[in-house]
Structure formats: structure tokens, C-alpha cells
Image (cartoon, rainbow, N blue to C red; front, side, top):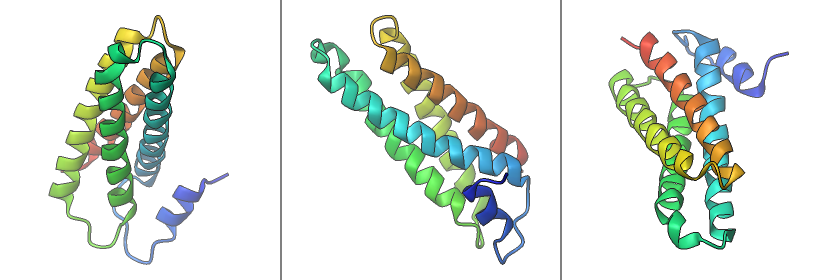
Length: 135
């Protein structure tokens, strides 16, 4: 069964070039990553050692914003600017890498950080998959 994201991509009135499945996965993982990062930041704020988690919270919030922006831009398929998409996806990859790395530092003590790091890696991979298909 097709997801809502896939339905919108497949039913766009303009020719949507490229691999719809790869794009769909990326858009969905961007949304999941933004949600995971926001949830992790909120959970970090609830921890007793919140002062030790400031960098994690900052990266969580920044990564969520970058992923949300990328999700929104990639969803708009009318006359996309491929070079700007590439820059945005490369930025997303970098934020996901850094956020995952920081969350990994706290993963042994906080499950929310472990979950966030895993989700960031999935998002990073999905962004790389789209980048590999964009010339």
C-alpha cells in the first residue's frame, strides 16, 4: 500500500523525474528525523543532568529544523532547483552526522539519545541515496 507521500509524488501534474521510491523514503525519513530530534531535545530537558546535554539539545533542535526545511523543499516538485536541493541535502547529511555523533555520547545513559542517533543515521542514508541520483 502506497504512503501518502508516495501518492502525492506519483500524482503530481508535472513530470517528476527520478526515483520516486528513493525520494519518498527520503521525505519520510526527514519527517521522522525531525520528530525524533524534537522528542530527544524535550527528553534531554527533562533529565537531571540537563547542563551536560546542552550541546545535544542544540544539535537536536538544529537538525530538526534542517530536516523539516529539506522535507518541505523536496516535497515541492514544480520546477525544482537541483543544485539548491543538493546543497540542502548535503547540509542535512552533515547535521544528521553531527547530531548522531553527539547523541551517541549519551546513548548509554539515555535511550532517547540512542533512538535519535539511529533515526539520524537512517535519515543521513536516505539523503545520501537521493544525492547519489542527483547529477
